[in-house]
Image (cartoon, rainbow, N blue to C red):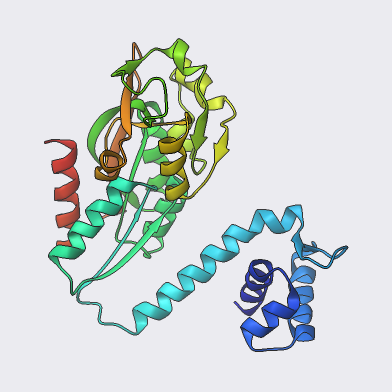
Length: 295
């Protein structure tokens, strides 16, 4: 844990001296711990040819894993210090809709201790299988569903389907397509896209034309919901996603356009551990989600 903490802090601070100050230790000690970490991994983590710390290719590949481990350790520590009677932990795909539903849930139960993680399908299922999250809310492509169920069964998880939804694109008022209600595939090929976290079970599909679209290089990659929303709102960049408008999209004047002539669907639902009985908070969240999906 110490090696991971020093590695992440050194990168975030950009220098060993700043990292040492933040960690309340000395620069030689930070350097020593990181070197030991590199020796154990048999690969350098930082380039040492400049004054500013830069991650090596290997360092970049493991940074997010190290950061997530430290976050989970903090969750364990925090959970140990509070009563578990009214805790609720959930993992979801990155979504304004889910954030609004969680806010509503908290407003109904302000004494609740809420823990929320977001990520890819793989990260969500891992959170649930390891007990960090009670349930995981996600969606997968319809023809990856059988494979998905098989894989999560080995993690002792089950997937409960809520609703099937068609694919769409999200556009802002600066996009010339803004006043349309649907879009053809030919028009899609001419657009600029923003793409969030890589997600095998969402994008690795057999949707013929849509599979080709998913393989195109987006203009913007991000895991920031704020950047994703604002890039759609302020430019002509669009997002490919599920046909469901969140309250925040309505607030920011972002519309969803149905994709014409495509038999493409995403299956919306949640994963839980097998034989798990949902808590009251989990049931309330799912009721709100089902109401949104099936008004």
